[in-house]
Length: 99
Image 1 (cartoon, rainbow, N blue to C red):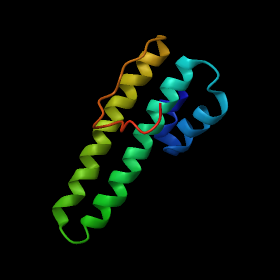
Image 2: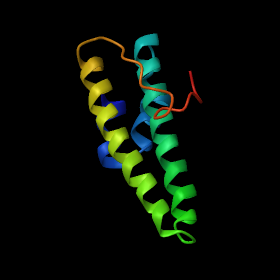
Image 3: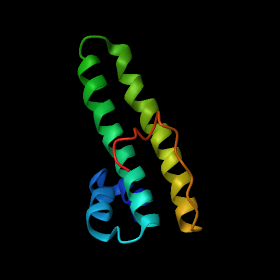
């Protein structure tokens, strides 16, 4: 749960700490990896489209809409983790970088 909720406060640092430090069980590791994938994707989208928005103002909407989608799926996956379940987040939001 902290891999998801912690992103509201400290971004991709929270799932990285859970992934590297407390991922003893496969269940926790799977959730931490998915949370970290979401955090890395959000950072990459902000950097790329933030730079592109310097050239074309329209591109500033892409990271804002992506952030809204990430926040929705953080709550979605966090609720599932709290219930002891695993809900896969779409690959568009959580790029499959870590397993």
